Length: 108
Image 1 (spheres, rainbow, N blue to C red):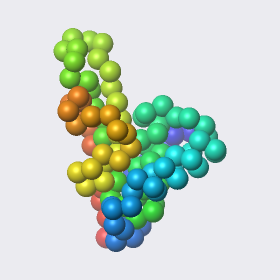
Image 2 (cartoon, helix red, strand yellow):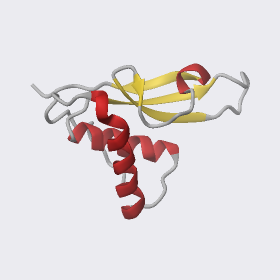
Image 3 (cartoon, rainbow, N blue to C red):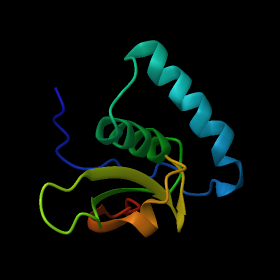
């Protein structure tokens, strides 16, 4: 169901990141109407793929909570465009250690 052999490249790459908030809100509306509410991991995957297909340089990030230091700590996924987190208002850059980031490669 979640087979993703490779991340989709950015189709256009000339989109401005200025108007991302309304676009992310519209994508979330479509998401909830078609597949319902998703957990943070699935939501970040959905938004990353959708934004890339719409021409944005979106990157998927996975992080581990800074506290507690001993297990079990939570993990969280989010989407960035440039240096801006666009998928959540949580302070993920301050509260999580990034353990994975899917690069955004523009097809040749």
